[in-house]
Length: 102
Image (cartoon, rainbow, N blue to C red; front, side):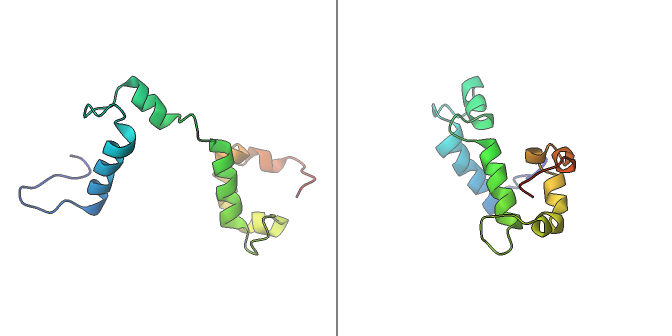
């Protein structure tokens, strides 16, 4: 209700419909209308999802201007705010260390 107050006869926003579909199709695995402990665990920590790989791919995709699948020092510096805010770089701490690959 904090994000969407359903008014009688009012249209439901697209994002609410999408969330309902996501819940029904992917979150409520046993189709009981609610999420139990195992379903929440699967949602938060899916077994088939590599968070580090996904974050690394995201950083390269967003920063690799010439799309050569390699990051130059300039590409990293031009997007420093993305790297500093990333868990993959330990929120910027790892960028202060010497790296041969840069």
